[in-house]
Amino acid sequence: METSCLNMLFSKRSMMQLADSGTCEAFCEAVVRFVGRRKCITNGEALSNVFSYMKRHYRNEYVYKSLLLKKIVYGRHSPHTTSALCELPVGGSIADFVLINGKACVYEIKTDLDNLVRLEAQIQDYYRAFRFVSVVCSEGMSKSLSKFLEDSPVGLMVLTRNLTFRTLKEPVCCDTGIDSFVQFDLLRKSEREDVILQCGGILPETTQVQYYSACLKAFKKLNPEHRMAAFEGTLKKRGDFIDQEALLLYPEEFRLIAYNHGANVRQAMQLQQFSRSLYR
Image (cartoon, rainbow, N blue to C red; front, top):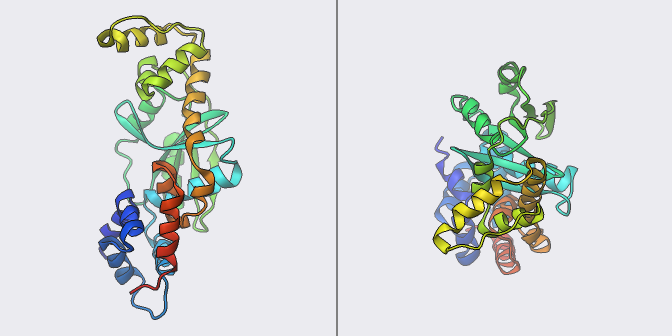
């Protein structure tokens, strides 16, 4: 059965279309394919049924990330003490989910729709910027991944059939591969400056053309332990800009997107109106 509409539906573009106009092609196609025509069903119920289908039969990365946000950031921890970053470029890889709560841990998601061809290279990239790495997988992949990771510091967590997370192996701190340039490249200009100042460094006084390389040089000179703490703390602050009250107004199915792209009350209210309307 064609599932591309599911990937398209749970995107920033489709969410904006539903908020602005009350419909979008991916939503209509997903409801027809995976819910069917029903009388007196609201858009919100249709959306919930589509996502329930995904959680049972099509557990793509969006499902994993949504559950990590719900059960770890807002369940096990608190958004006031914990931040999450999705799709973070690290070296030549993209970190699926980075959880920051006192320490930063990269969660690399491997669904039943994925293969393990690039996993070793991805892990190496993540250890260039972070000290803790875990793989999150299905129960079906857990046996092979347990063997693959048994002699490594990488942790392993399983998404069970009951939609709970079970830790099979805790991640162990590993900082031997940290690359200050990779960390520097992850940060925005203002964040780089904050890290340098937090660690007692001095911002360079130079031309705009030379400023990047001068800041990188100052960044590399910082005490590695202090730099790591400031680096992780600075990334964690990105979560401070999320409007938590607005986020809770969004349909649960779209909260991950709102978390990543900026929750706002106006859009949340539009989506509430969409959810209350009857599906046509």
